[in-house]
Image 1 (tube, rainbow, N blue to C red):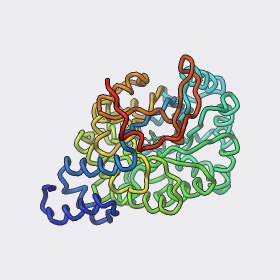
Image 2 (cartoon, helix red, strand yellow):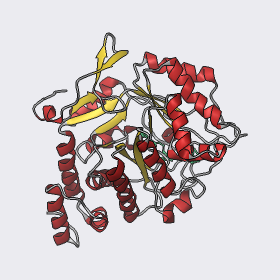
Image 3 (cartoon, rainbow, N blue to C red):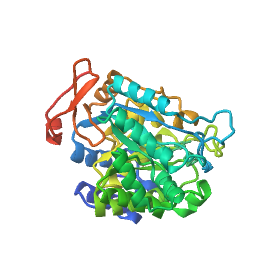
Length: 388
Ligand code: V47
Ligand code: SF4
């Protein structure tokens, strides 16, 4: 039984979730605001295990933020820089190649590329980033550019966002990360990032990417000036697009880190809020296969608990992450595969290395080479056992 002022209604919603039914917007708001956290977690865990059994995924990836110079001034962002700030930087081709060599040596299957919108760099500069990586290492999957960046490139070139996506795909883009989503609801978005692509534009660009055969992720930045109804609105918009395209792979709730931002007076979300948003996301997004507990921003401990609150993925080894660390994240910049395994196994789950497209990765030799293994069968996870 779930505690709260709406006990009867909440029990009905719980029964619906148990039976595999879909939670409405109104029901989602009730769950978000009133459900007992442990019961919400139990329900999310039911959905998680139905979809992913006992498996918990991770990948070996490396980040590249090619410039921090950005025309926008999102109030939650500690990463951006003005053109003349001392902390500004912009990668050269050689620096990109060095990062690719590092990724190769680490056996990374993915490079995650996002950055600022540099007003003195044309679209060709951004296209070149993808081309340079792809030519140097065609086997690495390039997950690059948020919908906000694609929207900016369209503004720069006066070409449609679909045409921009096609050119990126032809240069080697493999998929799109989920950033730039923040909170879609205009009441919040207009206060935290009024200038950049709005919620409708973000959804439109992901729809186009899906139609072009590119898989994408989705995120939600919570814990600043947002309220539970904004979370549910955001999740419902994603769920509607997913019903139409099935192009999303993973949803990643992103906890706000206030240090060095325009919202540094805000107290960062507690571990309990992190788990509530995780569980709510798993329940609402019944058509998403995966929910990621991004350990970089949650911290390793909360991420580990999140594996029983709806999450089935920890992201990866993540080397060279800047966006959260500039905003005060205290997590290490990278975890080794052994450390990730330990986190997962201690949580009672079975670690599976995946590539960006959730195919099993099999390591060979000393681990720096790899191949794609047999398809992942969730039922196998229900019989396998692991120990630390
Ligand atoms: O869009 C920026 C967020 C996002 C802060 O797709 C902040 O696999 C918290 O989208 N506190 C970029 N969050 C990162 C991102 C991401 C991360 C991991 C995996 C994937 C994926 C995508 O970071 C931005 C914004 O929402 N962000 N500043 C901050 N101070
Ligand atoms: Fe620029 Fe992205 Fe930071 Fe906004 S979140 S200021 S778009 S780098």
